[in-house]
Length: 82
Image: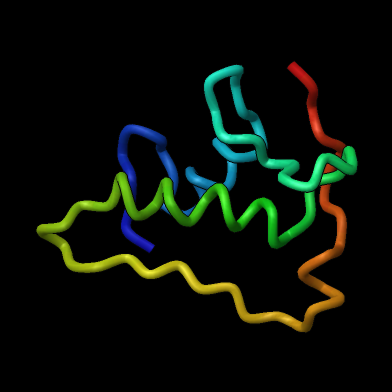
């Protein structure tokens, strides 16, 4: 992952942290509304942020999530409601 100085992290780490702490204008991380944030839901919010923020001069950034289906559905956190 590219470094992301504004976030003081690697870009993918920054995107994950942003997805886990959304604001009222952010895309919903709990896409299915079950009150839990799964690995797949977190990735689906973080990946587009990486695509938007990466430094194109440094090359492409292609986040990939490769995991068994059961793991993709595993809850990581409770969803926040706004």
